Length: 269
Image 1 (cartoon, one colour):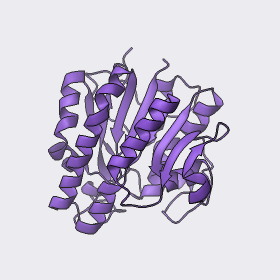
Image 2 (cartoon, rainbow, N blue to C red):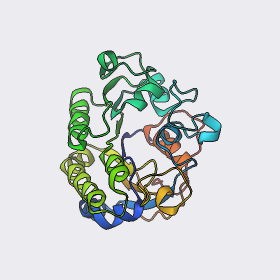
Image 3 (cartoon, helix red, strand yellow):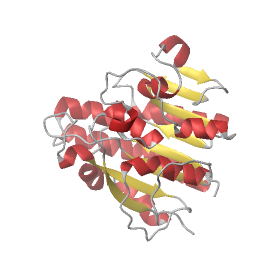
């Protein structure tokens, strides 16, 4: 199997709020016979450790990235590294911590924000360092990268859901409404991505609690969506997927040689 993959990582999105507020995503799921599977985040339910988990398959206790203050390059094998080393094209529209993990640390906004670097693991990128950088801009930056570079693997990582959750908590109109807005932004592009043959995975790193934070064991902090759209996925799948298996699922879709764990029963054939 050799597919192209878009991984949409909606930072800080609780699964329950996603199910209640993402009506456009629900429509695309019905039209394309996609699959909605929930997933439980690894611990601690913090951003940088879980970026590393999603993109390398290593739980935080294995990767050593145990909190957000660890600023260094990853010492694990990421999807980006595997893809680049096997001749695929990689790209990301993402928060600057992703650049620090897989390209350069610490982040230098002058040199690292806009990137075209064939020898880097993330070869083409638009990285931002502001939590309130508009999610609409993140999607537009991503679509520019897709049209310009035709990547095999594209990461799209907006931060406004997480930022709003920290200000108002998950049980707030502000949090729910930013989820609704991201649902609309996603709907601008999903049809063209699927028609172009991309396999689209929508998930989150962690959720958010009513106190406006995360990092613990509460259901709303750990339970996040995992939505699969594309013709490579089994529409009848009811598999229980671990967060550590999402990296391997991407690698399988990309047709990469790898040794990552990945879930059974998710892919057709």
